[in-house]
Image (cartoon, rainbow, N blue to C red; front, side, top):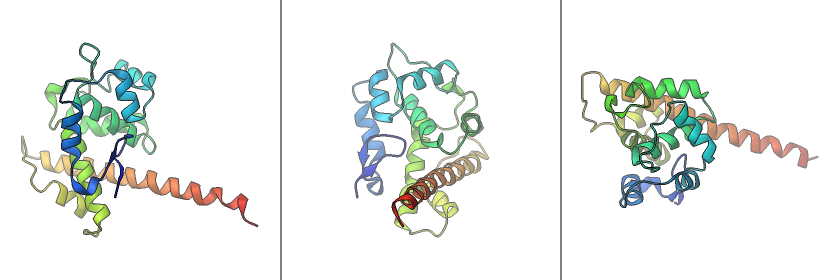
Length: 184
């Protein structure tokens, strides 16, 4: 089943677990310029620039965004329909410290994004009965850089999954509500 990678305009089958391959291919020749980031993420260029200015995303190097920066942008994009930006930055800071400094990251944003897509794939397969089970399955091979890191990652992915589902159900509710005027 072809869908879009969460938070992007990129068509992909998330059940095939090819997110890492797609990201690696996109960045095989280097970084992306702002217009490419905007087109692939669906985020307006001025929003990306604002996020950089406010320290939510580290600044591009030679006007090019890295895979980590791109994934940070799509994580924010994916969550902003449900969570205020202050909560998103708090969530990401919980595992990665200062958002504009990648040196203190517990996990890179591209790894976090890949884990999140795995959670969604597990949920879509309906192999697991709950979001918590899907999260646990997605991170079962995660290697902690320090004690307690897996628990932090599990908490962040759980919040992300609940937020993502909430946005999905909100959109469905709005669609059903829009049919009220069309019916007698």
